[in-house]
Image (cartoon, rainbow, N blue to C red; front, top):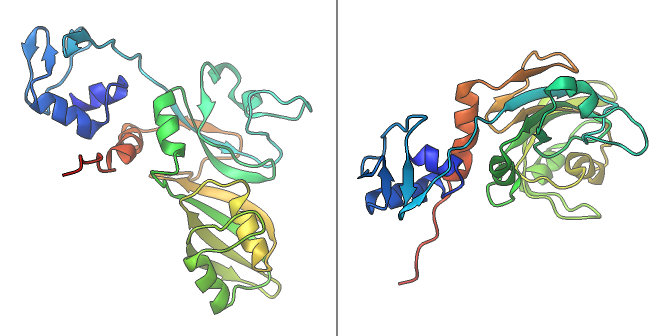
Length: 243
């Protein structure tokens, strides 16, 4: 029941639980006080006497965006866009955030606009993991700076998680996990430390991993991935009233 109300945009799951507990929700004319009640497709749901319109099933896709593709549905410079990759799948899908023209990897797409808002809102700090090839090698001091937060010419980035994947004579491969979404954040953080990025690839967005999906290909998210994404906004605490 709480998932139905949250998906319909009535309230977060936590707030929906409070509405149910207060007896403010009716299904087919009867007050519902049990949190786990399943809402059938033809059920009539009301909150405070007002009907809740059922929400059409949303679509959720994972796309492997290649380098050289713009994360927009139209580009005035006539560059290749994600709309070209989506083709007939496009419909009302919108990207969840963006990947730069020269960045590849996982891009989520959905027509669930409230979820897009939640996933991109700084308040929720959804983690994104990138694999970067950088010039030079990270020193212990560089690693500590990434963990503590890096000041770039444009902004101060919050602390990140870092893992060194491989070290070569003149470059290194690292995984960096951030929970902000500033413009070209990963590149700017590493450039500020003297390690320009030569290639950048997003491996994960929250609970969804790119896996072995080939460049340019897409797949529907699994039910488990969708539920995991929807649960992210509900993890925050509802504001409490002052004493």
